[in-house]
Image (cartoon, rainbow, N blue to C red; front, side, top):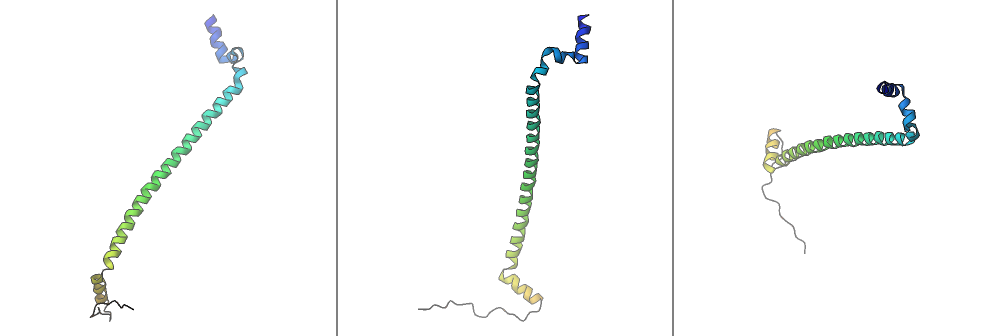
Length: 106
């Protein structure tokens, strides 16, 4: 019979009143709020880490893209490549016959 009373006390909510949990309700609410705060902080930190990883991948891709464009532009700015382009577009510009010289003032 004691077992049935114990089960009915738990199911009926009488265990809360008789065991003194109601007296500790402030502390229980405080612990509950701390758990909610802990979960929300972990969720926020995880989202920031995901965003940081995404940004690092994007920076890596942009750096590779920049390096490729820079190499292509350096290749196109060589004198021989410029002369080829000028001939391709039938330009009147020609390469100088004499190399440039340095003028020194005394």
